[in-house]
Image (tube, rainbow, N blue to C red; front, side, top):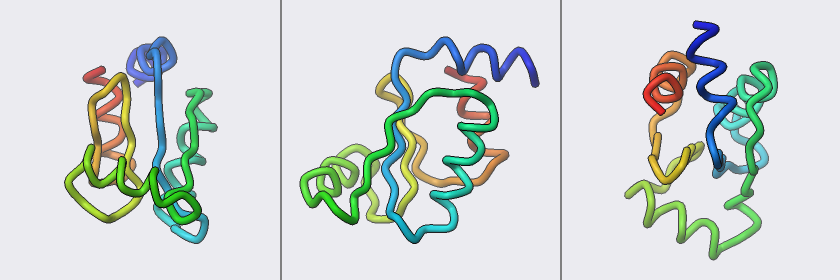
Length: 88
């Protein structure tokens, strides 16, 4: 697991599309912070253009959506996030 986390830390760009009152979004943010993975948080609830961009990238309207170096994870849970980060 530590190797997977260190790989994630070397990524060029991590974007987290989220909404303020989303529990899964808060969980994703906490995970990234806990593992010292820098990310850009984009509040799609406050930015209609970002919401449209998220929909285009992921093909869905649900949050969170995580984009790492152009690759998209649209269905969040910790296990899926860990697997996704390990593949980057």
